[in-house]
Every structure is written in C-alpha cells, then in structure tokens.
Length: 135
Image (tube, rainbow, N blue to C red):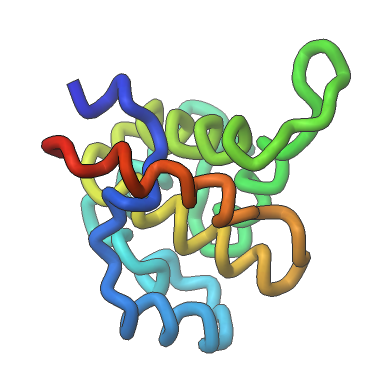
C-alpha cells in the first residue's frame, strides 16, 4: 500500500542532524554517505544488466536524479512533485524498499544546494494537514 503513495518528505526518517551533516559535508562518491543507503541498497543500485545502468557512486546517483528532471514525453518542464515521484519510483524499480523518501529528500536537498531551484520543499508544505493519518 505504501508503494502506491510515492514520495512524501514526511515519511523521511533522516534525522535533522544526519541531514545537516550530509548537506554540509563534501561528497566522496561513497554511496553509503547518503543517509538511508546501506549495504543492501548499494548492492541493488549496482545490480543492472547494462553497465550504463549501474549506480556505483554518489555522483552517478545524482546524475540519475538530474536525468529525471529532463522534459517529459511532451517536452514540458518537469516540476518538483513529478521529479521527486520519478526518482522515488526509480529507486523502487531498483528494488530499494526502505528509506526511499529519505534518500529522495537527501539527494534533492543536496542538489538544490548546488543548483538552487531544482527542489522546492514548499511544494509539500500543504501536506502538513494531510499527514495526520497513518503511514
């Protein structure tokens, strides 16, 4: 049931301290530096038929995140919500079943620090009243 919900920053279990540390820290390329990515997720990201589909470092993961920002099928701009959904479902397709919303949020906020405007957290501010239910 949770799979159908897609990205929701409120489901992120990344602590404020971990998020701040990640956002302020230098990227090394080690996938485990991304909060929410552990050994199982690293294995799943590296698992692909084609070498071009393998994600072996943080830079490639950010590259995939940026690729999903590209225009939609009709050539229209991909806005924040659609972009986050695309990345969330990409992680799901890779078999990552835990911490997807946290990973999406971490990468989105990190990239937004480098490229302001790529992620707009205020898009999700209206979901405050909607998140009182179970999740």
